[in-house]
Length: 207
Image (cartoon, rainbow, N blue to C red; front, top):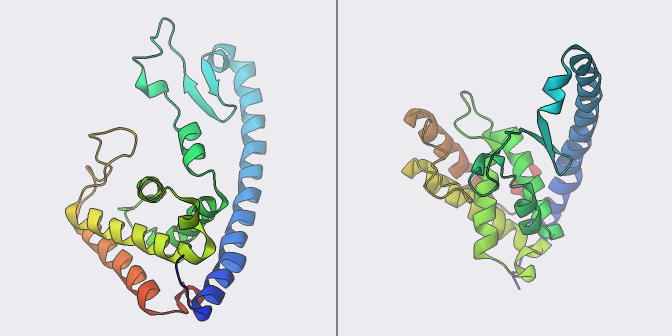
């Protein structure tokens, strides 16, 4: 079992209770408002052009994908929805909390000008971390600091190598179209966060 200093435990709990939970509450309100607007918009679109609505295929009641008549289910990878696979890997409470913490860190520190980093990059690295650490005991509250820092260090490595492999689509590089100077700046920012977490027990108080 990973050992965590009492100061770091308190800092981590404060980070979760203030920043992570607040972000989730604000995000829920935003999504609710967006859904309300989209429902009204789709009503108008359906009235104007019913064929547009009928051309959408709803996957798991979450993601619309355009459907093509006669398409082969095995050959059309673009129809594949990765939500179910991600949900299975993020099934434990510890992994879901880690995901929320990464999103909070991204929103506050890693959403940089020009967007060299996107939230999906952190999701991919979390999936790789889940693969490397499959045990439930590796995702307890005491282990979360190690998991977060491991992901950040892997992020620094990917940024320096200018390559971020997609977890599901082998051969796809998510940094392929990103400008090198922007990736270098993002690497410095990610390294500063990882170093602070590794050396400062109260780092989450200021992150």
